Image (cartoon, rainbow, N blue to C red):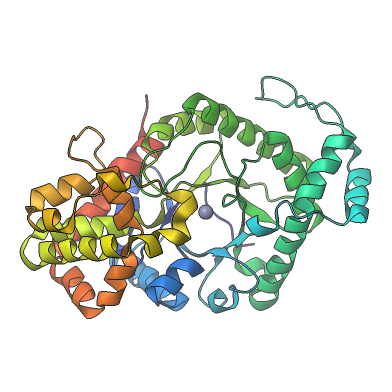
Length: 418
Ligand SMILES: [Zn+2]
């Protein structure tokens, strides 16, 4: 089976121009002694909004790898795919994030629930799990209730998995199962039952993306109870260690955190928990590379700055339509959005300091940042004007893309030591 490495980083690249600058951040980590496998992820939703094809992600990744002489593994992730959307990714992706969130909570066939519960008497009792403080109180009733909620989603994941395996061969791809885009977080007992069910279904997930407590808004920091997150994250690591021992699951199964990028306040707690459990991690950083493109354009001044301003004006005008597909993962305070006229008068430094995610800066504006984050459709519609300036302003853009990934994400999560 194609195996995913210990540490891996999902990097989104909306316009497929920054793969080299992103890969450079992994190369810098390697120089510091930590191997991080880059995974270029792009969802059907992003492709549909930009009007791009999945092959473009593979082409950009391959070109960057060749140019930088990267000899270690890398992958291309068909992010958040379903049975209806997977086909376009079958030739170019070797990593599939099977999204079954929509099936969660749809009641499973009662006969399937009974069969599952009967097959797993070991789940229907109090579980004392190494690394979890209090035992998990699990009964047959709990198992049946969780099975009823998740078995249909697991079955759906099985159908998608087998569809991909038919096309690529079971050895030809990495499987992730994602449940993050749903309303309520999964508890550790639920995760354990879900993993047992995935094993029964014959799915070999190497990464699983649960929904965690708190808000993982796009491009801004974590909002929630950090201590509670740390406990939940740590308990999930304990559950995974147990499940890979007791069930027929890949031994390298690890958590995947669909972070939405920039979750600075939980990187250190995550790093400490990973060290305690000697666990690997996959972390998706979403498409904030596109915001670094905007920062680089603004920094370049002249036409680059003018373009960045026009994109803001366009995003402000189309705000409601742009926000709709992302409603669950953004929190924009409309009152805090500057007018297009105000932004039109900004200097490079003013634009950059409003957008760049520096929480210590009074000028940083999270509402503007989130609006621009979902505003990439405006840039896509500009076509060659946007893509041309990406090339013209490449030095300042690449510096920001690499620096953002390395300094603000890789360093605190993988290299830090506090
Ligand atoms: Zn996700």
